[in-house]
Image (cartoon, rainbow, N blue to C red; front, side, top):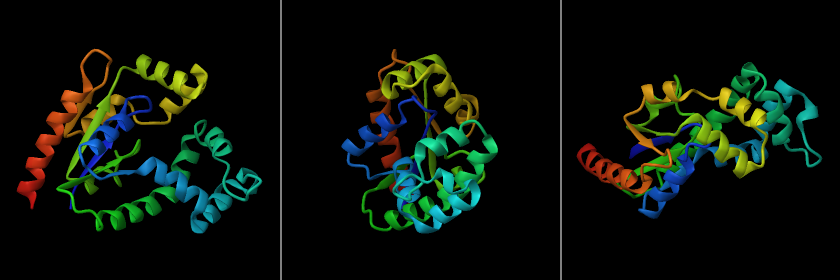
Length: 199
């Protein structure tokens, strides 16, 4: 199965691009959403979270409290790496199993974290959605009702735009000036050609 990774920093419009691809008939696996499911329902991951961060990060329902975890990991990059090491392998396994059920020319995975030694090599193409930092900051503040300081911490915990674009096979610009849909349509046509040739 020809697979495409779609990534970008928080507020870049990565999820919007994934929705557009989905409307075009592309099966899209939302890794960030699946990561939340794994965190909430996978007993092995939950045990690992307790081992790494203690029972105080569990909510009243016995599941990891995402707000408490976020408070920890977005202030401490080492803690974020430890959390990712627990969640990502389970998400990758689910993605692999999901891919086997798809019949489209190509599939896409949308995730904020695809760059790095365990990321990009899994995909035939890596697409990065890019937007200016200040625009991303404003979008996330409006979307989440978060403070500028909180959003800045989340941004600083992610790879920079420069790091992301270095590993990209294609870059979509979502700066509010260039129309995003024509870029996605061109990308889709290119990916269909590549997927057919790959097969």
